[in-house]
Length: 142
View (cartoon, helix red, strand yellow):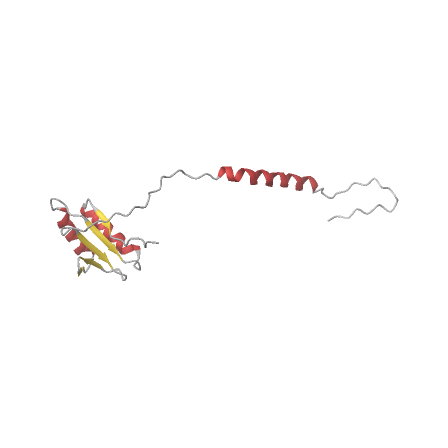
């Protein structure tokens, strides 16, 4: 802050070199009010039709292939553990060649990472499997 001290010779008409901040504050407050009013108008949501929850009971058929991923990331074909991704890919290619092609159902443990489940999905896509589903638990009834 600058202080206005009168000159020693008594001349009161002296040039003040301090900046008057009152107009600056007024302009900033007006801009703040304008921004606060226009921001809610600018934030618009993309209209998306969200899926409705419905409970469909699906029964696994005997010919369906169930691939399980446990909490450690190990992959199982029905009940037998697969040693590596190449064994999974070989079995999926054999299933893809069947006519009619059975559905592949993936059971992923809730505590496992997404990466092993993603490898199974990628192997299904690479083998040409047309129907891939996920086995989940239904939500609790409240």
